[in-house]
Image (cartoon, rainbow, N blue to C red; front, side, top):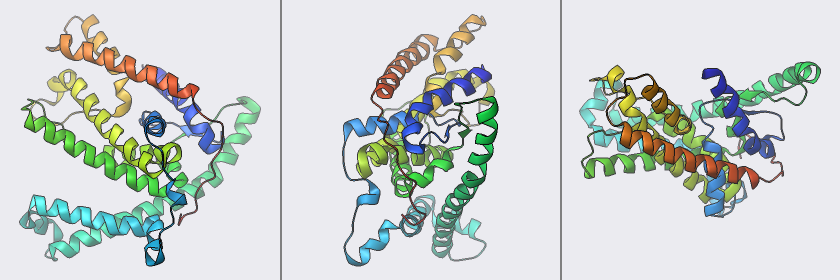
Length: 309
């Protein structure tokens, strides 16, 4: 199953990544659904790409993603700190003023993203030629399947818009669950809403502009939470009483297989009729959408953005 997963998912990703990377590499991580989410966003909305937006006067500095991130993340951290409570944040700040501490944490986050993108360029400069030297002799026509941050260079601003909208969508989903009194509540996971939202934002920006980046991130936020809900009954026995759950957007295609294997194993968990059938229906719809989007993929290539774009 694991071998099939890591063979099939990069193959699904390849039609979406080839126009962006010019066939140099594809995606090899548990975030394949981010790519069709971006393509789908482009079918829903259309706007200027983030790199094409021109802001007047001093506002033009906001086109630099590092500046934009350094402004947005501290504000987001402060809002979270207000919700959590000053006393709780102060316990983590080591005696420093809690607001100043959150601001510095946010700026540090922005700096970390800038370092990651700089490292991406260094990695690609060394990795791609080395792989091509091997592939051309042994496996002609193949591509390396690499991690999602390697795609962030193609739309740094899309990274920001995507992860923020993914986070917002997951928060709204959680509030809806609370409002309707669901017995299982899925909270936003930072790893998911940053990396999945960011990658969806990159491809959303490519297909539907800056609005597409926002829509793509929101799509992934909802898909990730729905997947976690569908998988929860299968994991309750492992994580009972811990508050933990396992998920990710890619597992929406594999959830039906997990449910069917559980049934074949002779010990179906409670809720198979509801969650198992829902998994099959949703996976079928998602897969059909992916194949439709693959047929619509353009062949135009996109150059990587500069570090300050």
